[in-house]
Amino acid sequence: AQSVTQPDIHITVSEGASLELRCNYSYGATPYLFWYVQSPGQGLQLLLKYFSGDTLVQGIKGFEAEFKRSQSSFNLRKPSVHWSDAAEYFCAVVGNTDKLIFGTGTRLQVFP
Amino acid sequence: EPEVTQTPSHQVTQMGQEVILRCVPISNHLYFYWYRQILGQKVEFLVSFYNNEISEKSEIFDDQFSVERPDGSNFTLKIRSTKLEDSAMYFCASSSGPPNNSPLHFGNGTRLTVT
Image (tube, rainbow over all chains, first blue to last red):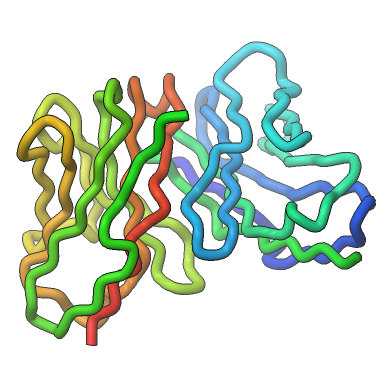
């Protein structure tokens, strides 16, 4: 069965610093991978997705993620974080079912 | 940009009462879902719905839960007799195709509090 691990529960960065949020997945075949962001009191907004093709995918708000099959990873990156990026970030995977399986999330705090 | 809308944003109910959570998916979407997030925990799949029937459900989605698309625009989740442990944020989502082909679009959620 597919699963997702986000090893970092909480990350704090300074505004302007670079960011990398880790995500590892478990699935035997080619996974379909997503990053969602949840601001306080809000729903889940899709940042980016990987279905196939180029392993470096660009998303909204300046985020990108790279699919690395050899490492079973799909880490999210941003070169320069803004205070408005403070939120909870969820990695998710779909395998061969209708279920989107979420990781436990990483809470990002941004200091000025 | 079209959105998934959910009402109410917050519902308080007493244990044992029935609740209906309402969702209006994006109009040309064909796949519909309910997820929930207990406070401090991960987002969990409850049920997916396609072609007027449940296509998949989780172990959480027992006989107390049901879904309906009564009029071609709304998509509802009913909990027949609420328990304290049903307190959570419930998210509705929709997609134009299956999840391995089309991303899910989520609503802002309904926070259900069972007292």
